[in-house]
Image 1 (cartoon, rainbow, N blue to C red):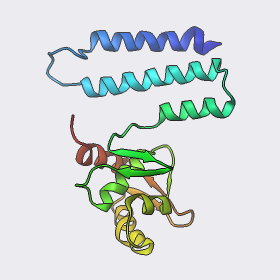
Image 2: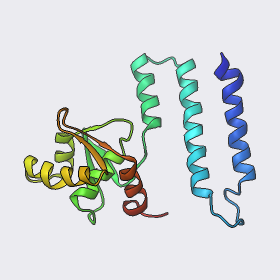
Image 3: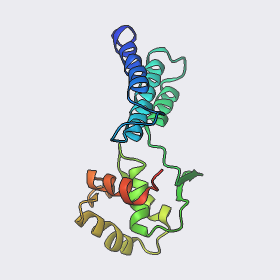
Image 4: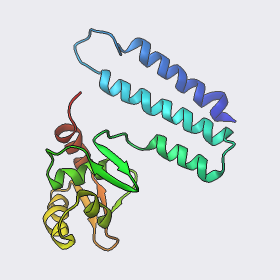
Length: 169
């Protein structure tokens, strides 16, 4: 299998080179690249694990897919998942910021409007659509598909979350 013979070994060399040659964990250099380097390492390592699971799993197809899906989702510590619900743990965010953060955590797919409404605990679904989703859609931070009632975060929305909502480390 090509991924075992060629791609995974090359990915591992890439990880080793990035870790050893780019200054991660080291002081120096004019431009600080540690954050993007570490994010790249995490994503490539996740891909390697997912590829190994895909090839060698002894789980059912559904269990293997669930493991791969879990690894590929964004880890947002400000979001707590409990009993099929998501809750924002930060109390300093308004409803629009909460919606952006929730959709950011599920960037690969959309989120049902009703789920967002319940998760942010807004008082009225129609007001939620007009006062929260529509303004975010107008600013191109979200794509609010009224036909399917699904909300997708845009690249501008991702940038907004990463630069203004998530706390810098």
